[in-house]
Amino acid sequence: MGVVCSVVVPVFNEEEVINETYKRLTEVMQSTGESYEIIFVNDGSRDKTALLAREICKNDSNVKLIDFSRNFGHQTAITAGMDHACGDAVVVIDADLQDPPEVILDMLKKWREGYDIVYGQRIKREGETIFKKLTAKVFYRFLRSMTEVDIPVDTGDFRLIDRKVCDAMKTISERNRYVRGIVSWLGFKSAPVEFERKKRFAGTTKYPLKKMIKFATDAIMSFSYKPLKIATFFGSFVSVFSFIGLIVMIILKLCGIGEYVDGWTSLAVISLFLNGIVLMILGIIGEYIGRIYDEAKDRPLYVIREVVNFTEENVK
Image (cartoon, rainbow, N blue to C red):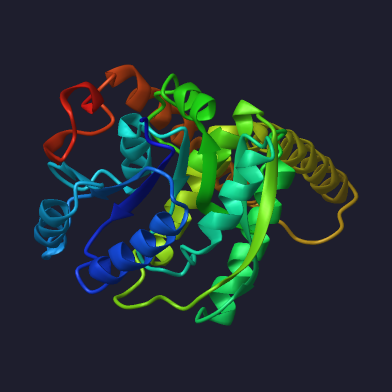
């Protein structure tokens, strides 16, 4: 009998929580009475995460491990899990237990109703700072306004996807990945399951401000050309504004209004204003060019050091 549900769990330095995550997920999946697999994807952890995952695999054949050669990033770890999952439905969930494993049961129910994508939608976020909540709320709505893809707000990577969605994901090989955006871009029938996000069970967040900014940049630039359009508009506006300013200064000069050092004022206004705008626009263009460069290199998305409990046909 084939696997009904695969649960993909990316892990990075999660030694404090991985055993509890395994326990909670196992309880939930066993309660379904269906066949299942839990796939831990170790994203280059520097603690005992990989060792603990191997011990779990040794004692439970339903649990599998993909061990990366180094850290390739959270979104890539999710991708690797999807690549190797063999279930009719594939669930992605983080190991920190902020997304309750019990919600998977509601997702499976929706899936059996005929939905291809069932995403967890947060109605409450516990244990997070006001700054984190506010920036998350602003980001999701800003992203939605910047792209034509209908990306649901207040959602993370916690979701269930049908086998055909998972197979479609395998055809997409872009490097700077925003998985939840790609899933939405595919356009399959979807539905939300609302839940309250809990405090992290143990350990520290793996998404500090610096990583959140990179994540937001990847999301916007993977699904929108609007930054380039805004840069073009802004550049045109500044050019017109600077030209009008130059005309005004010439008129004032001819009318003898005010005292000016010949040539200095006009040059200062134009240089300071335009140089800042040009550097900003070059930065935006540079971000897109950098992504083109990443794609052109055509390197593999990830390198696997070891797999545990996989059969030969499941290994990519």
